[in-house]
Amino acid sequence: MAEVCYEPADAHADENSGAKARPGGKRSEPNHLTAAQVNQRERALTAALRARDQRRAQNVTALATVTIPVVAHVIMENSTRAGGNIPDSMVTQQIQVLNTAYAGGTGGAVTAFAFSLTRINRVTRPAWTPIVAESSAEEQMKATLREGDMGTLNLYISDVVDYLGWGTFPQSTLDSYDGVVLLNESLPGGTASPYNLGDTGTHEVGHWLNLYHTFQGGCGSTGDRVSDTPAERSAAFGCPRGRNTCSAAGADPITNFMDYTDDSCMFQFTAGQATRMLNAWNAFRA
Image (cartoon, rainbow, N blue to C red; front, side):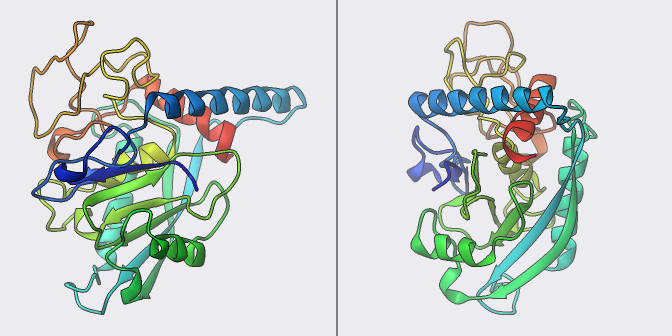
């Protein structure tokens, strides 16, 4: 199974998770990795980049800009809003949020990525909702519904137990588990305040493109493996301006999309994160 980054409720948060919590709990997820998992992933990235360089030497050009096709699966218990039947407008607004964020339109670095909604696939299957992380139902759902190749982003939008969402990291071979799960009410216009502006999606897609949390590794020297995100001892919640939990230079990056702050507090990726995502895309998903 692909490595995943979850965002769980406070009671379920731990060092192995990387997801966002549901309203009323803190934002967290099973996408926060152990040091050993990070080292393993970095070795895989290094090997994939080496293979990419060999392909370049054989005149295979690495991609510089990327438009990612998106298939949005809306998993419902029934046809009512309470049963998960969110309108198409919430899905299209989510794609707009992704495009704005990854284009630097909210004030952060410009990345190479844009997103194009291919279709909305509505599925009424009570046995699949609410989605429980790492359950047999989740595996069955994804194995049944997933579309496209490694470069196709599959969003699974539904009611979710414990988390706001989670996303898989890229790997060298396609796994049917690959994709991003989002709490339906975290999409723009949803009820999951303060996480209802669509940046759970921005955050989880960041994991899908190989970004760690800004607080990965705490105050250690390697941290999130991006040099221009200041070290951060632990996740930030709310919008704690001026927070500085490490002795290294720079205040905590609480406005970064890869922290756990409120959607209204997040507005940027860094240039280093943009480079890391593109390198990972060319290594794993291109």
